[in-house]
Length: 178
Image 1 (cartoon, rainbow, N blue to C red):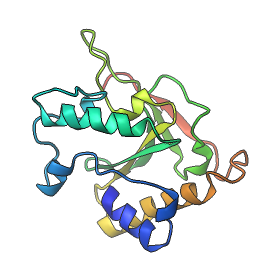
Image 2: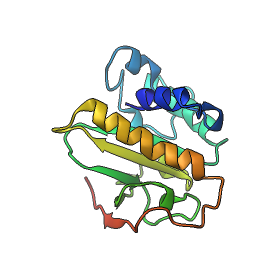
Image 3: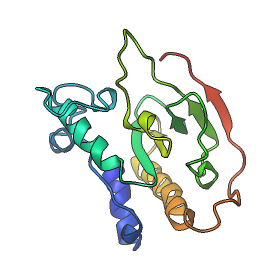
């Protein structure tokens, strides 16, 4: 879905305002979720790992350090809802959530098991969020259009007067575990 959103934003002349990254190009090319292991459970990655996704996570992590904002776009195939995930215990003042037209926000800190600190990229960056778009019972075209519109508003307004809320308050949920 993310690639389709980026293509639409580019056609609308907004590509000069953002960069994008296909986080897992091998899996994307094969239309698979992953090659060796789930990339979203592999950050910050390992430079010398034998697992493709762990090496890719390391590369992506180094790239992400350079950016003011990180938006990770996902499809939620088993959900009807669209929502924001902040993979931390608290909200950050480094991301203008008031520019994202989604009402549901999940504070979802990663489960740390047996000393492991691996997880999604955005857990390591206060300026990062994940946007999940539910596909269950919806037309793909409609969902991609909605995602494009949401990100377009963010891209157009983030460097303007970001102190003015554009959208109503969020319903915030704290997620424990899975």
